[in-house]
Image (tube, rainbow, N blue to C red; front, side, top):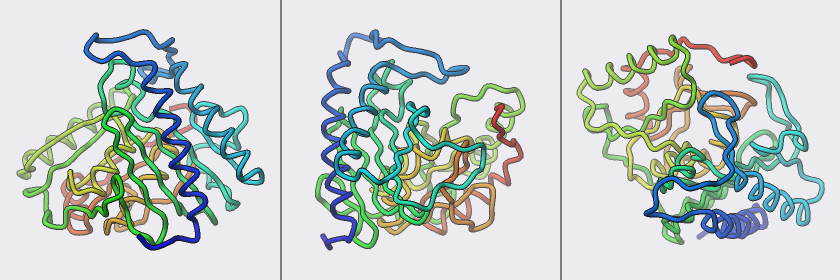
Length: 291
């Protein structure tokens, strides 16, 4: 593993993720169905739990102690985080992007696709990514220029997939239930299936999806309606360091930029991402601060 200039940030993120995992596991009792975690509905079917806020406070505390001058943007603690409107650019300063529990609905239902996601950015570009699933004990880590790793072993994307016909695609729909969004999402899936898609999956965790792309477990990840920058910041580093691309699903070979608000992402090997986007067509549903 090549030593990165961002090694201090990487080590802190790994330590924080492991500590977060201990907290998350303490709330769960697998095999007993849904369990009570003091769930609150943020909007529609988008949930937050006591564990989300507790984990985020712990992580931000560790970051503030080690890097007191850095900005921290977390999903649940917006009152203490710099924020912006839909599509606004991220700060250029050293900045951390934290999702304490990506896959909160999965967490509430004791479904194990749950991850802590911690990304570090400098000059508006993700440089470090750590994603940890406490239920599978899977630690994904990457720092710019140093490769991507799963539990210490280097990982690479699925380089064999070149089109939808040999692609295992993971596609989250998200928590929107507007008629036009649902219809567009369903039509997109229909297009992939009609084009001969090998396999379709939906995990409910953007961070976990990006990790599975980076490790070659799935060929491509597509989502129009990613919950926010904290969902993708860390995973972007992992996919790129594993040899893949992370594009904005609304553009043509356009690298995804980390911005505030909802987003669109397509990640994987260049060839398969190109074909997945071609078959899907450009999404038309537009996000706003009200949606």
